[in-house]
Image (cartoon, rainbow, N blue to C red; front, side, top):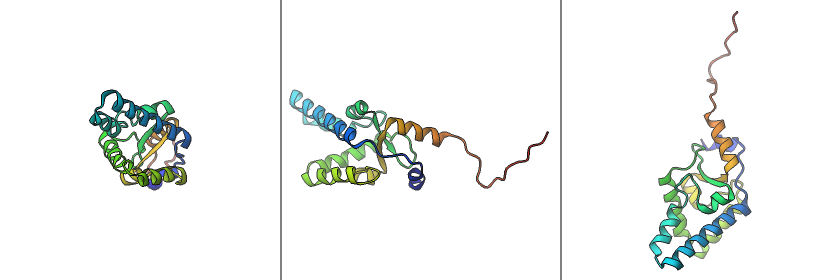
Length: 151
């Protein structure tokens, strides 16, 4: 199914916008932590940030979303939470953050470690809508020859 996704020509999300969205989300987590002094609330936001429509606050502002590359549809909330939990575990190390940033910039599809593990990708919302339309469009069976037209 991933080959079909690659053949669709859906490009990775705009990298500067993706990084700006991530910075906005990090600022939101920091604000939650500093105002409430509750680490659990910040962690809950970090893990759950993409669970509603595949968009965190930063992604929503940057018009990007997280999709499941196996289906081309918005990622399921449980999959998004697991992906973000792995991202959190990597974020506690400078090396994990650095590797993810390099992958986002260098890989053609912009997928980071957790994206590779959970088969997800951040894309621009317009591109995601185009992919969902293409997937939902009915297609003729490949093994059925064209039928003659009779009058």
